[in-house]
Image (cartoon, rainbow, N blue to C red; front, top):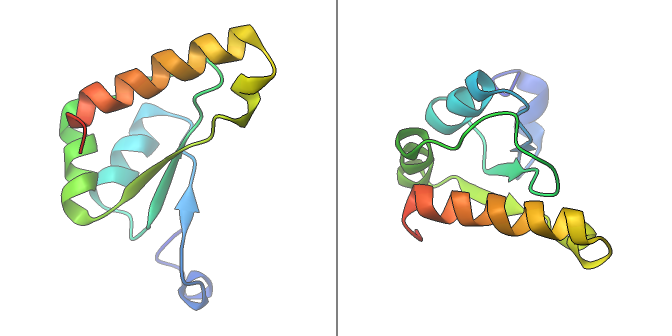
Length: 93
């Protein structure tokens, strides 16, 4: 839990949500700094504009890890599609 006192000793806190409910909560209410979006596989949820804009307004940033896309064409396809979906959701912010 990000509100736990044990997490307060860290300067940056990043999470990687695995469900749409966790993604929404991370964007709208968790006290975090970075949301890691797994772009090298098909996302188990859709990126909706309201939570993404809520995170951007709160100063949360998104991390897109693309290193696996260099090695495999399937992962490259997912990386491009998911990163494009994230950019469309936040309108490039």
